[in-house]
Length: 289
Image (cartoon, rainbow, N blue to C red; front, side):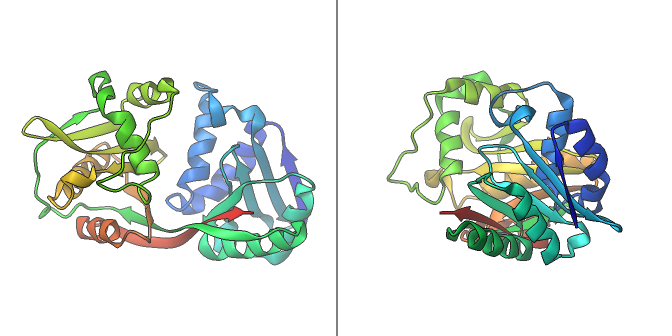
């Protein structure tokens, strides 16, 4: 096994893009990061490629393991063709040296295998931060009711959008009796609005739910930021907005739409399956302590 570290994004892209594309839907996070980096249109925060960690492990048969981290995000891994090779994992960990990371996110078995070996090598512990499932949709269930009016997120929505976005980010912590606190960095919210990929569902002129299509790959589009405030839940708003923007992505020519779900939220998982989303694989987000 040999390890290759990259300081040049073009070289990493050339070596790993086709490998990651073997499971495009599963690898929508690392592939999306690669495309964002190659576009060079935004260098803010984690998008600044000079801070990225990019590595691959290979043998005579080709690349066995691909690793990319965009600090402060977790390391993302892909074992080629989902064939886990423990020697490749050990090679990667040895190559990391003293480099420390907050955690790892990948297909479940690979995440567990890497986390166990990494924690042992570094004499630290790990804990599951989020138990996830990756779903893919190729056809929307036409029986899902279309409620209200769909429109794109606009600057006028700054009166509530920061609260909703923070509510989505910490949905496990917030209830109908607690209010998420927006960041003081208002540019973060203006940036999300300016990208034009967030949608708002209105019912009788009142915003009731949101969802977005943040990443568009070669044949796959990602759906994310699905959030309905607690006081509007249980009325079919989430199903309506998700089904409608999923259809928008398919109508744009994408083969499928992909999303990550938190398995701790059985309600949302049930909603997505009714819309037409089908399981691809389990995924774990693991934090190192």
